[in-house]
View 1 (cartoon, rainbow, N blue to C red):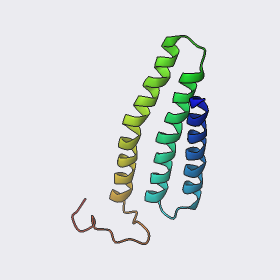
View 2: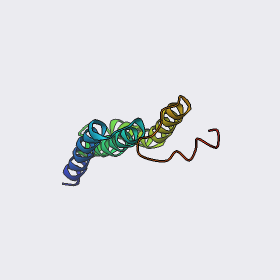
View 3: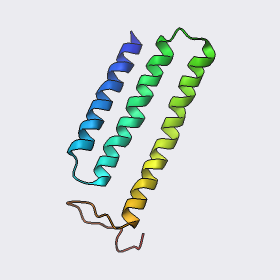
View 4: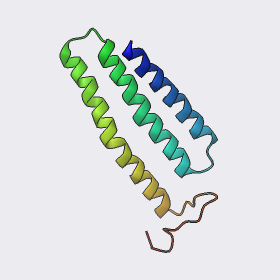
Amino acid sequence: MIEYLFLLLGTVLMISGGLGVLRFPDVYTRLHASTKCDTGGAMSILIAVAIVSEAPMLIKVKFLILAFLIAMINPMVAHAIARGAHKSGIKPKGVIDVYARDGF
């Protein structure tokens, strides 16, 4: 039963992240939506697959390790993309860029 809740949560997060990527105005907010989609959605689905899978325990552990790696690596990659976008001069829409004066 719990695996269905994880699958539902992952599906909802993936759909809302996809809608956010389509609807948000600039690269930073789209990046936020896609990061939440990847991290939360993929992790929830991988945990559900690890629970429901009738595979050997080693395969289940690999699913859980993959979910852990997604949780650790995805925020760092999103930060690197956002920093690269900021350094290349892409301005956020509708907000004051407080980092522009600091030379970041």
